[in-house]
Every structure is written in C-alpha cells, then in structure tokens.
Length: 241
DNA sequence: ACTGTCAACGCGGTAA
DNA sequence: TTACCGCGTTGACAGT
Image (cartoon, rainbow, N blue to C red; front, top):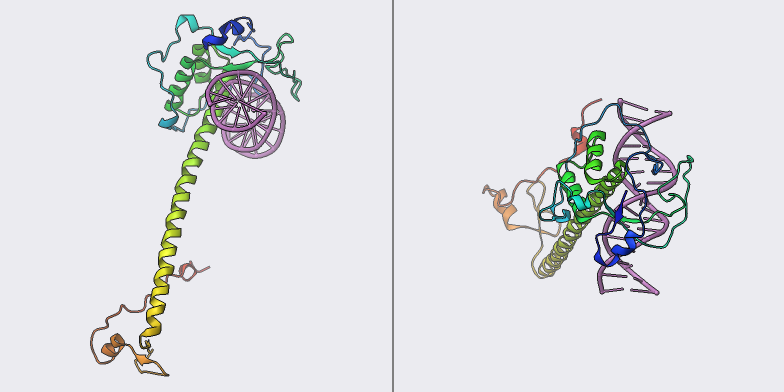
C-alpha cells in the first residue's frame, strides 16, 4: 500500500517511506488480533457521543477522495526496536526489517471514524471490515482506533465528573463555613440571652426556665415548634428474616 | 528540552 | 479456544 503524509512539510519524507501497509493478506498481523472472523457478529449496543471531541471536517466525509484512497499517513522518524510478541507472531514493527513508523490518520479518515463512532461506539466484525475497506486501513487499525476513542471518551467523562465533584465540594465547603459562622453567632447570642429548656412533661426542671413556646403549649396554646421529628432508621425498616 | 497527543502494543478478563 | 474489550503503557511526533 502506498503511504503518504498529509502534512505538506514532510510529504517528501513520507514518500520515501513506502511501506507495505496492505490491509489484506497479512503478514502484518498485529497484536493479539490476527484471528478469523467471529461466527456471530454482535450488534453494537452502546452509543456514546461527546460533541466536544467530535472532529468535523467539512465536505469530505463518507468517501475518500481518490487521491487519498489508498493512503494512510505515516510520518518519518527514527526506527524503533523490532519486537516479537509472546505468541511468536510478528508485530507491525517488523516489516522487511523496517521499523514501524508513526501512523497519522488523515483528516478524512479521522472524520469518517468519528462519524461512525457517533453512530455506535463499538463495531461488529462486518462493520469493521467495511470501514477498514472504506478507509484503506487494516481492520486491526480500525479496531484500535475505536478502542482508543472509547478510552478518550471515558477519560473526558471522568474529567467532567471530577470537575463537577470539585465544584460540589467547593459549594459544600462554603455552606459549611456559613453554618459554622451561624453557629458561632447563635452561641454568642445564647451567652447573652436567658436559658430555656424544653421539659419532657411540660414541667420546668432544674435551673432552666421554660422557653416561651413550651410555656404557651403547656398553657393550652398551640405549639409554636414542630413536634419532634422521627429520624428514618434504615435498619428499623428492614424485612424480617 | 519539555509536554501533549495518539496509534499501537501487551496483558488480563470475559463471553460464547 | 477464540474474539473482543478495557486498561496501562510505549514511542513517534508536533507544538511550545
């Protein structure tokens, strides 16, 4: 397969790096996925869309221009180590002795992948094959792109949640500060004012005076304060064993 | 030189 | 066993 780089400044470098990135046959089996197709394709069940991360490229979505039709951009760089995986299969890095170069997807490829990702965050084998054909990439590359894209989505979501929690924390801290201050103020008032108590039976006891509202109640008036609330005890409502 | 991004890898877990 | 996924990591590369 032909290789090029969409960045103008390095195009000549890329052209000198024509690697056989053919999607078909493949001795280029990568990672842990040089496997036959699954017998039962699984329909995607999840749809995740993060508009902020969607890359929109005007115009060219859906079909690659013919000039780009067999192209993935691979930029030049120093050779990396040739690695062999634990099952003996050869990774992408080993290609006629040439090291794997950093692949950069073209804008068109990225845009189409993003579009497909918006439709569904996972691909069944059929969709993967079709997309790979359409993009002139290997199915494995499409698969990896989707995996990384899901990871990015998750990371973004986590960041958003983290930010939300941070704001919640800040709000609660502020509320706490306010309540503490209120307590302080009430305490200082309490030191100046006479002390009242709410006697259980209505009778005044000890050294405390009965507060006006309790006095009112004891004298037959309607209580100024709400009756004592009963706290919900989750264990009290548990089913009998 | 440093840092962020991202394609790709390696491994463990899981479902069929 | 196979195919796939999530997760952590690596390394190339671009931008500063």
